[in-house]
Image (tube, rainbow, N blue to C red; front, side, top):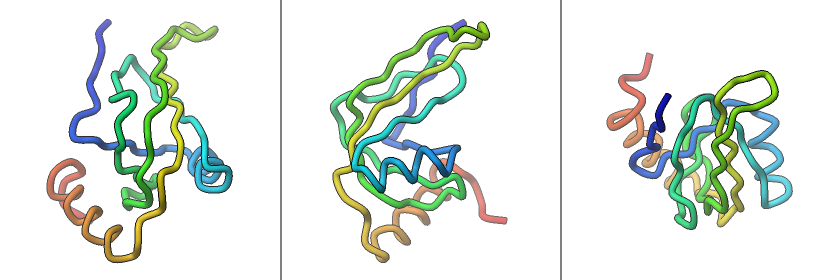
Length: 105
């Protein structure tokens, strides 16, 4: 058991519903498996489940716990700072593939 750190300001959504709520209401949360440490108070780039940069968000809280099913999870609460422009999203996505996600298939 240990904590994994989310390096380089990456906040990748696995659920379309969680991403939709953030973009629609300006605030949202996501649940990640395992204990993770997110940079609370910092602005980070948010990515869609398809690894596309979509917005800048501020991490409000990062809560690591063991849920009722006995699984280690981290809940991350955030607020939308702003959506990225088309050009910003294209550049951030290309950089993320080079740095984090690996080659595009």
